[in-house]
Length: 440
Image (cartoon, rainbow, N blue to C red):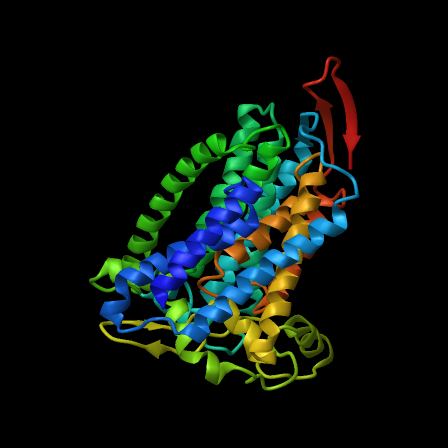
């Protein structure tokens, strides 16, 4: 059934592109990334001795259809509302110098404290310099004890600062070399410290968010609006992801010792193992939550646990590793796609509602991002959830571990919706008369 799933999904993608005329539309991205994952599975299913059943394929297709339906419902609701302008006035938004310095100081302080805290956890400077440091620290991060909750929160803070700095960078059209150096330093420091966590997926998260934020920012000024310009952007993205895959392999092999002697098989497992793993486990995982809405309502339970001492399951804010499943010829994985999170709490019957809700949410965020005259809060949030959609073939980032998602939203709110950081003066630079305005 894998080949059938691949063919039908290909047809759905072609139809989708004819309707939306946009390679980067969420409904197209959802199908495109799953099509790629299914293609890799086709190449390796004989080696692994795994495939997709008819029931699994039906669950997947119901999800795709309901995701599109969620988009359609939002489109119908908003059809009569405010129309989007074809091109926004181009605004040169210049963050005040003291705010840029403040961002840099916050980034440096968090980085220093984070490294100091990690040093205490691994037994001092000698533990930090040990060649097995990343392996040992990774084991500590996922042992379920909650020892690294604060560190994980600080890593996420740095990620938010890095993304926010990228937004400030691209929307400021007239930058001095000093300003470019400051912005670049912040982003470089954020990425460098992220590597300490040994989490390559968080580095991927930063890249994907930047890709969609840059896209949405460009579209405000008439770029990336047709297939021809989108294809050029796709080629550039392809180069970036090729470099990331090379880094993914080298870092995994030599830093965290997670890749063996068959790199192609390991990359195939990362890109497609969630599909057959879900096929193997969905029946036994369905309706297995320890308490009502354990996954979907996770943030609410975490608040009760952290604020009021009411314990529900693990006391960790982290997403704990799932059990591994195994196949033939070195197939082993513990990721089960987005769909696993949908069925754990309420069973397969929740898939249509859950996927429709996700589609509606992304349609809402896309609309809010498009209505922003200046790339800001809503575009940042759109980037967060587009990464969750991008990684849906691998695991769930919408519900599981969503406490950190809400923390991310709150941090973006502080940065973009208050004057703590986002205090600036701007000039409209593409009108006949330059007009200076203030944007809080």
